[in-house]
Image 1 (cartoon, rainbow, N blue to C red):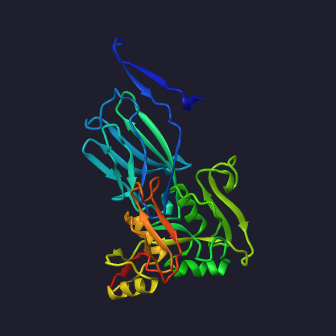
Image 2 (cartoon, one colour):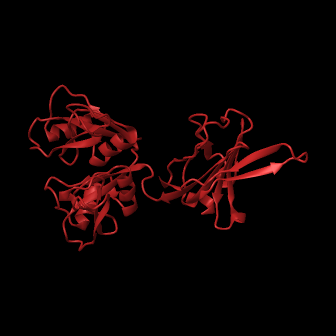
Image 3 (tube, rainbow, N blue to C red):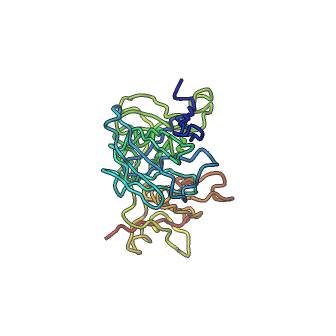
Length: 341
């Protein structure tokens, strides 16, 4: 196909003895990029020829365009030439060149909206050997400033009907996750073998590493579906917690506490015992990391690890569940949450 060929055009001067050579580049394979509504996203583009001028030279030009089906309706996004940079229309003051090195023409789009969905063209023009890259941006109304987490109560796996699932998430300062939110979480690496309720009454689970107990090793990665279920059926639930509006913290105490003592200790500190939604939001969105296991409001013992290490969570960043011990045991410390005033 012509679009996959590199075409060289020779133009002769009037004297007929000298010529200039301009190379029209092949279009690179389209790159697909996903972004959550309200997030920041990077659209990648790099100079292909190592022999070309670097971006530090004033002669090179970078042009980004949002491409429409009708080329006459294309939207200018960004134009850069040397130290001069300009953004256009709805992209004004929202788009910036990343410029990690002299060959990087990637852009960062901030505060992504649904209207940003579409096809983008990056052109790097140095007059000799140019680069053209197209990127397809898909925006999902999923994770904006929050985290999806699987939840099952102290009764154990698959113990919640749909109404109980809704209540369980609410009790942990969260809501039942939507499919879009679970899909975004899967793309970010959520791998969970237990099926859980979603807000539309369907039951699904996200798999990154296919394996026999989780739908078989022959099936590829993806969000596996049980479809819509009778709302009296019993499963786990996937909850969604938004960014914290307050402070999540470990309460320093000289002694281990029973559950009731843990609740009271947080109250004495002007706070409340933290909920499961709080610990996940602090871990995922704020990078909270602590190897001490502590009581939470549902009677569970958990701890958040953002930096995997020996004796804490050696292989992955995660919120670790120790279990639901006897509430009368002086077994652990406590995590508290102090809401913004």
